[in-house]
Length: 415
Image (cartoon, rainbow, N blue to C red; front, side, top):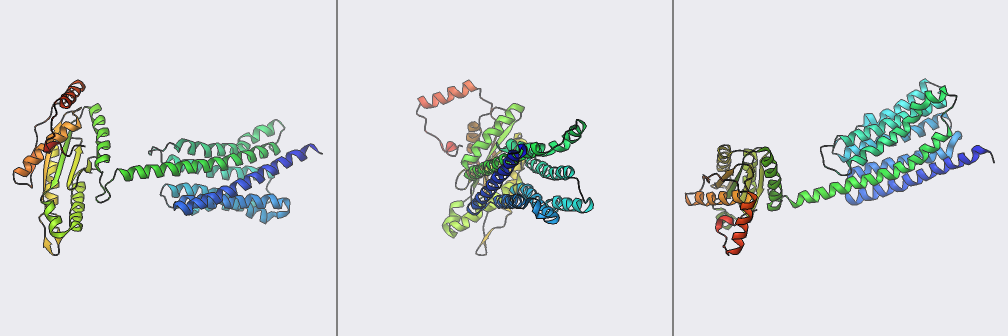
């Protein structure tokens, strides 16, 4: 058997494996697309099946395809590469870009028309360059999401870049090989066929990592959000405020806590039903989010009780609290054409860096009750707190556990 025959069989076998792997992975992606309703999985699945069909036609036809059919089959393969990039765009919520997807196949067809006959080595370099370009675009699309803490982001960027690097090798090494009297031939084709199998499997593995991590992140976010108002719930507010206090403490900046309680909320539920009460809660959530800054943390910590943490001093927070009170009072809510008085009582407490959240919440809660006793629809400020050291905090907690202290109303809505 000639020496080249064994290598030719190996290359054909590798491409056959790549075809079967791409087809199976494409069907698996389409199956999960139908199950999970994630559009990007459908795009990736279609790209894999189209790519598998292109390779299968190329293997089956070989030299018998004819010039233009061969060009068309190759163009379909480049189209599949473009779909992989477009799927990454769809996964990140961006619109498909059909112009770029079709640019690769169009460039290939134009080159075949304009440069007929095209040297086989140049044809191989052009095709490698087109696929490498789509791989680079895919990596670039994933790099755009660097602001998001996805653990799978780095492998998702590196894998297409490595794929592109393998494809670019004949372009980079072409002049060097010719200078030394060699050519880029079957050896590189065999290496590319093996790499294609690894790339197909590795890319799907990364796709599932990305989808899995996004799903986990979505569930985690949902567990921290109050479904009625869209604000943080008690758990989410507690976690977010801990991070903000730590960050502000490192910078040496003050923080201020507000506690809000909608006045006479129970009477609204009793007179008009819980649906009207839910509407009041949503109106107040809108009033508070539009009156505070995007950097301020807001949460619903009880039935009609809300809290906010602001990275600012007390005087600035009092102005913000007044804005919330005025906005809610002017909201103009009506039930069955009957206007409702929408007012809120607000307690505010502030302190310098390192002030414990529990201390601020207790002080703000005391100020809230003062506002209610003072006639409601008002803002009351507590005396500014002195930050406790870690040792003082531990001693205070130990003392509370030894002296059966009953919680006062001021401690009922602690986070």
